Image (cartoon, rainbow, N blue to C red; front, side, top):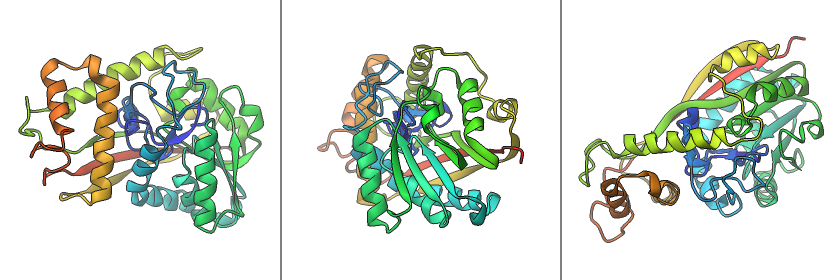
Length: 343
C-alpha cells in the first residue's frame, strides 16, 4: 500500500468517510495527505473510489489505482488543507517536545505536503516520507527542497505490511488515511508499536467528516445529492476493505486498537477545514477534480438522475455547474488519534 496525503477522490476517507481530504492519503503502501484518495479519498470515509483509486502501487486493495496519475489531485487536496494539517502538526509538537523527536515517519506520504509540515514542526528531526509510489516520493523530495528542509527529509519506497522491517525506528509515526488500506489493521498497529522508540508517539489520522461543497438543495436533481454520494462511496469502501489480503473485521475504535497494541492513549482531536463561498480559483479547481474523480469511480453505483446531476455539475456551460456557481464551498474535518509507547 502506498501512502498518500490524500485519498484519491479527494481521498478523504476520513472515517472512511472522509478520506477525501487527507493530504497524505495516498496509496497504501505506506500511503494519502492531504486525502486524495478514495472516492474522495473519502469513502470510507473519505476515499475516492474508482478506477485507479489510489496511490499507484501494486495495490493490495484490488483497485488498481494509478497513484502517479492522481498526483496533481492529491497535491491540490493536501495544499487546500494545509492550515488543518499545520494545526495538527503543531498539536503533535505540543505532545512530543521537539528536542525529543529525532526521527519521524510519514507513512503514506503521497506528494509530501504533510511531510514538509512535520519537518517544520520538528526542526531537530529527520523526516522520512514513506510511500509505495516513486513518482509521489519524487514530488515529496522536490517539495522538501523547495521549502528549505531538504537536508532533513528523505524518502523511502515501501509497501506495507510487507516492508515494515525496512522502516527502522522512529520517535513519531504519522499515518493518515493509510491504515485502512491494510487488511489486518490490528496487526499493522502492533507493527507500528514495534517501530516506535520508547516514549515515541503515533498519530493516526483516520475518520472525521465527509467533505461538503454544496447546499442541500443544489438546484440540480433531487436535494441531498452529497449524502447519496457518501452512501455510494461507503459501499465502495466496504468492498475495497473486504478485498484486501488477510482482511480482518474490526470495529473502527482506534483508541481501543491502539491500547491493544500496548500503547498509552495521548488524546484525540479533530481539525477543521473551512473555506467559505466564494471559493478561490485553486480550491474550486480542486472541487471540480474531486467530483470528476467521483464520477469516474461511482458511476455504476449511482441512480440515473444522480449521475445526470453530477454530469451537469461538471458541465462548464451550465450556470449551476461547479465551475460557475457562487455558493460552492469546502467544509470538512479530520480526526487524529494519538498514543505513546511506554518509556
